[in-house]
Amino acid sequence: MIESQSRRFIRLPNGQNMPIVGLGLWLANDSQQLENAIDHALSVGYRHFDTAAFYQNEEILGKTLRKWIDGGKVKREDLFIVTKLPWTGMTVDKVEFFMKLSLKKLQLNYVDLYLCHMPIGLKFVNENNFVPTDENGKVLWDTSTDIIAVWKEMEKLVDSGRAKAIGLSNYNERQVEKIMKNARIPPASLQVEIHAYFQNRSVVSCAEKHNISVVAYAPLGSPGRKAIDFQVVKFEIPNIIEDPVVLDIAKKHKKTAGQILLRFLLQQGIAVIPKSTNPDRIKQNLELFDFSLSNVDMRRLEGLDKGSDGRSFPGFPGQNAHPEAPWKHQLLTLPDGNKMPLVGLGMWQTDDATELEAAVDAALNAGYRHFDTATLYKNEDKLGNVLKKWLDSGKVKREELFIVTKLPWTGMAPERVELFLNSSLRKLQLDYIDLYLIHWPIGLKFRGEDDLVPMDGDKVLYDTTTDLEAIWKELEKHVESGKLKSIGISNFTEKQIERIMKVAKIPPANHQIEIHVYFQNRKLRDYSEKHGITLAAYGPLGSPGRDPKGFPGMSFEVPNLLNDPIFNFELSSVDMRRIEALDRGDKGRSFPGFPDMRIHKECPWLIS
Image 1: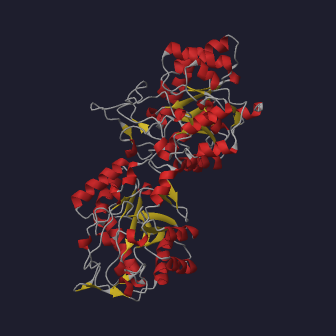
Image 2: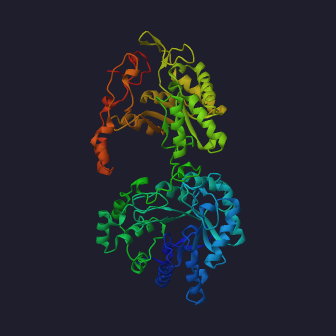
Image 3: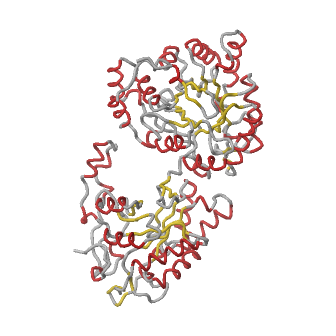
């Protein structure tokens, strides 16, 4: 099959044609070697070259391009030159400054595409220091980055003619959406890491939704990067080139593994910029248009995706402390449109103030923005103190946080919902809560705001008058008032969900239930998903720290799934089936409930 000429380009929103294959120039700054590589690339037909201020090789590219343009061997309008605003330029006053520097080094009047290299900023020290560090080698982050203000400056570069098109690199879905809502000139392109081990599907889908072209850097998984000590970052490079599936498909098509991997992306409409200075590989990486992968080939390659574990570069140390760190905000969209970070910090059994403050500080520094507490945990006030400290310092914005708390068992009456909600807001020192859950569908007798598990001797005092529908209606009122962004449920049964769905004006956004490999809770998961309710797993590690003696009148075994030998295996599809087989049903629960819970009409499970 010979690909038509039109299929070798991607049409950008401004009408430009971007060659679908380009030469990436990252980690290529040996002057003579790079000049030879660019010469060879131009001679075999490359016209798309991707560099960046950060790569420190714009001058070498510019010198080589000038030689070809002045020699009449190529016209400027036939070239597609990409460069990028460095991390140290992510401020309003530095956008034009770095663009002018790039044009000077490239010896060009304009670039075809100018990208924001990263959505996060580093402190500007001087124009040549792209990764500034302090005396201890710690990277100097500029946490004041305003990606919208920077984008507005990028738009001015198009107005002035210095850039034909502008785009983004390494932005996540949330950040792309943020730019799209505020852009006068929408991004023409999004450059992100994509290869068969890291297919980055959610970001690709977001870009496609907004008609933003996608360019894959490291499309071969960066096999030449090696296990280097990169700014004190040590990491393992996935060797996708030697994957048996890739090699088998390459043998069938009589192509190299690299050509298979590149073709895999081209057939998805994704442009590629493989990096190489090897003349043979440079030529091979352009020879992608005389064959096609079958649907079976494509499915096999899609099956190689390792998710975020497949990344070829994890980022710099401390990067997640930056509010715009792109790889920490993996979000789940709730049915009401609000977005919840997929990973949060659970706060049950944490009420020591010093211990909790240290844990939340560490979590915020590491990039956590989702915190899950409850009135029953008796630590809302301690979490609130830490959050206020971070909010007051400007290190985090309220809208970046996702705070979850829960209505206690003693609050399971319509007239007590507002009492406990206001108490939570006061303790958390917040104006609103991102997600408020009914902690359990059963109620306990109310004997005061602080008596959360009322007892008569060793007997738990149940309130059997619980009216779930009436309580749900009260929660909906507080969504309307703005005190709650989203509302949900926890530990409900299928029948209870059905009853809520029948009366709900605002359906549950989330269902928090126990899920781990010994108790996979499949029936309830399927039922919740059927109603469009997102899930959150508590006890995902089986609650190894739970002490059954801490529950009145109870003795039960806590399953220690962390010691199960399955955790010595990589999670291939076969491994997933093996882990699914560990499910023990109800016997795998880490908490069977309080004694006599079954006397309550809303008991979510019977205690055997």
